[in-house]
Image 1 (cartoon, helix red, strand yellow):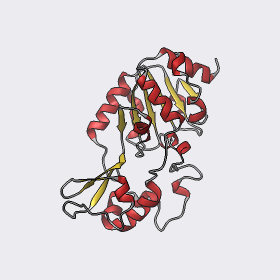
Image 2 (cartoon, helix red, strand yellow):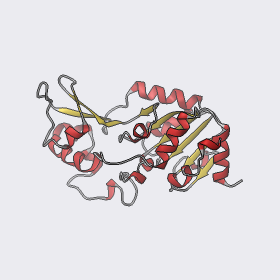
Image 3 (cartoon, helix red, strand yellow):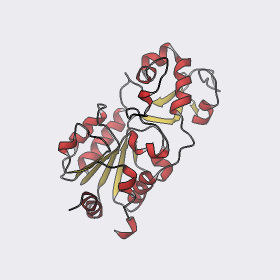
Length: 243
């Protein structure tokens, strides 16, 4: 059977689908990924992006961190694409039980998905390091230098997991729970190179592991179904009303 037809058949038959996605989910919304040819890692800055987005760099050079962060990480005008929209439709239909994402853009929620586990946090949440007061992403975008809390004047930090920082344990436990109970796991738009996130697929026990990614990943041989195409071209063929 054709791979896309097989994929659609499995989606139709499954009622406990979990989607695990990375940067490739949002590239069709105009948000650059990190490792593709035109991704953030291949653009020129005073420091490599991986260095700038580290905890130690944030502590030692917060103004430089925020200059990069505002320019490259706050894509607040981005809209959900067909993959986000179809996943929200699958959740509403009772088929998709959870989304585990490495992305920090909030586009799954913007599309209407409710049960989203954000492994690396979200640019939409920012908190004062002194009094924990909330600051919106728009306020961060339009501030200068290090954003300061309106309540107490303390520095504000994005609720994103920087390099050298650990993942939120509750989010990680929830992701393990949903993946381990899924009857179908769709992995899409991720190089499966960043741990511990990439190790989450080890918790899937079923026989419908679908891997959708344009380029090869270290996990390709483990997939029950491998589709090397763009996510949009695959998800656009899902007709939830036809199930």
